[in-house]
Image (cartoon, rainbow over all chains, first blue to last red; front, top):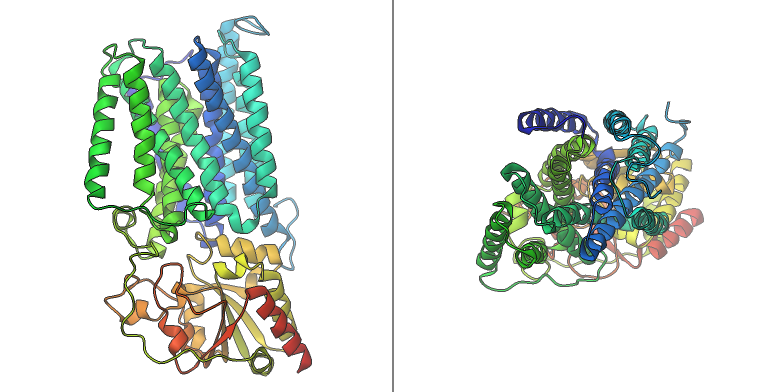
Amino acid sequence: MIVTITGIVALYIFMLAAFTGYEIIAKVPVILHTPLMSGSNFVHGIVVVGAMVALGHADTTLERVIGFIGVFMAAGNAAGGYVVTERMLEMFRSSGNKPKRGGH
Amino acid sequence: MEASSPFMDATTAKWLIEISYLLTAFLFVMGLKRMSSPVTARSGIVWAGAGMLVATLFTFLYPGMNNYIWIMAAIVTGTTVAWITGKRVAMTDMPQMIALYNGFGGGAAAAIAAVELLKGEQLPPVVGSLAVIGGIIGAVSFSGSLIAFGKLQGLIKRSFRFSGQQIFNLLLLATTVVLGGMVASGYNVGPNVVTSFFLLALLFGVMMTLPIGGADMPVVISLYNAFTGLAVAFEGFVMQNAAMIIAGTVVGSAGTLLTQLMAKAMNRSLGNVLFSGFGDTGTAAAAGAVSGSMKPIEASDVGVMMAFAQKVIVVPGYGMAVAQAQHKVWELCQLLLDRGVQVKFAIHPVAGRMPGHMNVLLAEAGVPYDLIADLDEINAEFETADVALIIGANDVVNPVARNDKSSPIYGMPILNADKAKNVIVIKRGQGAGFSGIENALFFLDNTRMLYGDGQAAANQLIQAVKAV
């Protein structure tokens, strides 16, 4: 890419992102553990962009087949993760006697 | 769409992609942040979803790509299949669906590694190593998650054990790592070694997960979720893709913390979960010290008892959800509330199949938040409760966890349902719980057993309370 992510830069990104993930989860109430696990499951569906590029550069049939499976599964990870997370959080909104519209 | 860099020159395309990934990383982190509070949670997934959409669309601009038809076909089919299954799955089956989608992510990371490594190009040592490590982790997460899915779905009934299993698994892992080292070292090892490496990594995921019992699966699923995150981050480095590195690492660390929280809630260490046999129905120790007998009771008597109680605490477990009884139970509680009975739901951290799962199931039935209390809030209240209604819960109310050092669940925090004046247990039959441990609560003097299917029993109780 236009900015090369070299070893030390990657380590910086890695470290800061790790802290970010830790901080986001640290204060979460237990009731949201399952939806949040599902939500983080959705987020690593970003692997779809890597799989797309890998398939886009596949040359042999074997590479294409593996790449296809990769994109297929990554898209499944993203779409499935989104749907189930959304469904779970949907119920949290409609429960109780004080409905929260649009999450604000 | 045949051009090597569609719509624009390569430099512009690359800049656009970088900017879109930056935006995606921002949306992901903000989305997860919003998901960590009940008030903003629903908008959180929408933010994250927007991030995913942006990244996916801009990646089509990536210069030098071919196989657009293949890419489109894979995205459309993958999205459709997952979307439909995700819409249809019952709330009770949510954990295994999460496992399945998570396994897909791991498999995708491994597939990226496979495509890159099969090209047989001389990769720089760091890149090659990260591709291999991400490949192992992703493959293990994939095959392991499939096994976890099979176990929770009831497709794999028994835990698979043989003597020397841990040694075997260790050797398997060692062989995989050695092959991985050969692949990563950059020597032209040929496709056979690469293929063997991935097959062994997949096999290791299967062998590692098979001996783990069903009760421990949530922790394992959460662990594999973190694994997939890491695998995505490593492959992100290989692909020089900042969005993958950031999102993967955030999930990797968040997932690790979540796994620790879950293991702690079950009073297990992670090593214990992965390498000991507990959680399996076959090996759990038979309780020797349980004495007395289970005393049955009729629904009509329970109805009277609850209708004239001052305070009723309901302890729901996964069994309630399996019987689809949560709606009936809430209907019953509404009747009691109308009569002026104080009703609360006591949720153990691992009620359901993973922490928070029971809250989701109760929310689905329409139970308001303020009636739901977690372990720390409710435990002192059992002593003042007239009735503790246990429905579908077992190990989380087993007093042996408090006082029997020989029990495998000794030390696990439990709900003190045995302290209530009357304990009513709705149970299908006399069998032991998910962990296979006999429950001393069922044999106490203040405990009565209401045998039957959760939904049918709740129905009978509704009729009984109405008749009072």
